Amino acid sequence: MNILLQPPLAFLVYILVAVVIYLFGRILAGPGHPSKAKSSLYSSGEEAPISTAVPGYQPFFLVAIFFAMLHLGVLMLGTGTPSPILVIYVGGLMLALLALILG
Image (tube, rainbow, N blue to C red; front, side, top):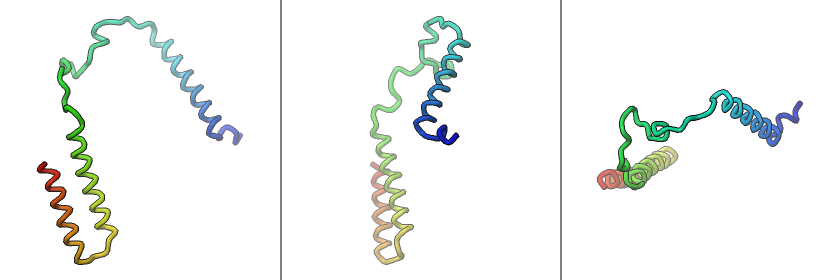
């Protein structure tokens, strides 16, 4: 019975179960009828916007760098020992985050 718990055999069993469920679902669904409505984008009953919402990844990278600096700064503060240099570190961290926010 332990042979069924081996990862390669369990993977093959799960793949077989997934294929059976997929094929059973295709039988239940019946034949499809292509139409323009099925191939168009759906956005809560409104037409989809033609332009992109955010042109590029720059806003994402700014937010990612902000949170990376914030989390790593708090991690450094939490694992460090209290010392006078800590005030300089916190001030530098605050200035860096402020500069990142203001752009």
